[in-house]
Length: 445
Image 1 (cartoon, one colour):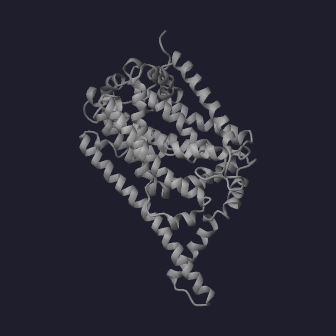
Image 2: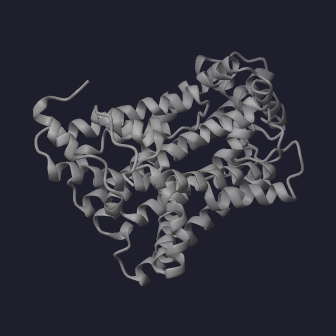
Image 3: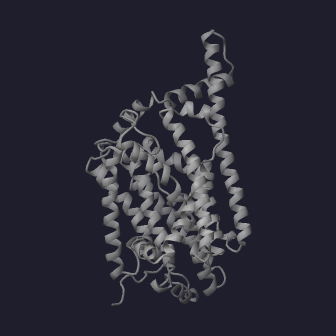
């Protein structure tokens, strides 16, 4: 597994960045985003995946669970992942700039692609073995394989690339919406023909089948039964049974879900992150006025679009068929871009103040150990919800007690760990595998 002798010096030379050379602000944002991701993930980990965005219509849609759902989906859904993805794009340029500065030939590309292939392996482990089908490492690795040719593009060209990807994502989102609209219209028409005892052609039969399936899974009346059925498959099951259940889910997410949604979702924010890193926006070099204006515009537009979407779903009691009939355009990714960039600008403003910098410094160790903390969130929640049998036993708001405990543990653990070690345990393993050489772990005190 060792590299050739001629490359050994170079590989040692491109060892992980020393603490004093890290861009602390990026670590702070990464830490905030990493903890923020758990705000959304905790619901899908502790309850049926169907409740990721929807409320549980088996219970009251008012009260503390409503506020938990509202704060979660209105303020955080997709935005923390957006921040994390932008930082992945920025981190890609940081890595490649360092590798290309100190090495020539194929070595930078060799290290970069080895790093991503190992990330893909970790993503599969997280999804299948650690039982988290919402894994982002696998799509990050696959989408990241495409970034290398874009590393030297100008800011303008990277933003053009981001706009093209955003256009594709919005088109696919809207196209999917209108394909469901057609199923509803054509399916109902086929039902009328059946009621009149008329013979259906093959196309009508296809639409009728899809419409029947959509009615079964897309109404608010069917939601309670579907949630209960989903819970039965996971409540008090052993590891092998849970593994089998998530295997089918993961295969769907990593195939159809990846090409329909995840690759565009990842590439969009990777390109934005690369562009904002190159022009200095993401590292705080722009004026206070620029960040203030961006924060106000981005957050305002993002929240407005999100309110339009969420209020409609809530009023319709999360009935997918009624929502599909009512919706005109898919603006999920557009909303996320505005809101995520707005939040990024807000975090820069906070960091620019003395108090804000001190406060955000709390999250820097979380960001430096983001890989470890992300995987450990899957490990901890799997133990709590499946190992201890707490899956589907807590209400939505109660899940945040678990989340807060995990946050506290990871903050304390990260600070203590980095006093004695250079890297988080999973970062160390990932780096060692990437460089084909055991990396130093303990700090010299």
